[in-house]
Length: 195
Ligand SMILES: [Fe+2]
Image 1 (cartoon, protein in one colour):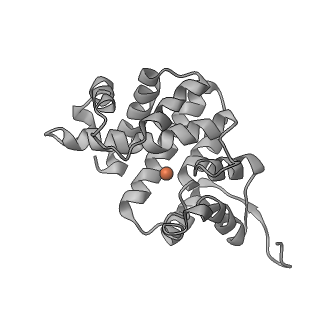
Image 2 (tube, helix red, strand yellow):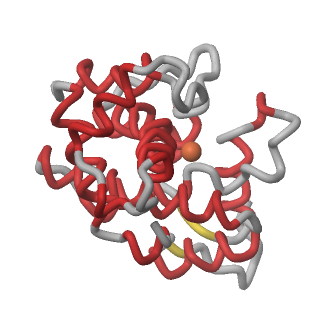
């Protein structure tokens, strides 16, 4: 809905950060968003895709997390709604990616960007848990091999859906490479992640 005197702007990273401040009060969820942003940017680079767009999708994908905790059927849809209500324009492919990461029937991830977001979402939790189980509790003290070993331990960080992570193979990445890209991207922002 466009009201008179109400300008619709294309959303930028700075604007996205303002929305996160307003809607995502949970510190760990904010860190998750920054981690997914970093990995999506790295994946876009790997595939020669639009890094800015992929990063933004990662940054915004759980914007509605607090609002849809108990109404999961609205997850993703509400995030897109919030962005529009706040007066920003969001492209159709970005909106679709945000909605399709939430496993709604009929909204299966189809494009490369959608599939990348879907697989990345649980990867950050696995990497964080892997760092925390190490005595040093730092990303810099683990490596990709360490995370791959933890991946195989089904009861370790069981909330990090292994099938969803492994769906990286559907867009042409072996698990080893996917985890490596994710780990390096998160290591690059370890200060932000305080890890
Ligand atoms: Fe997420």
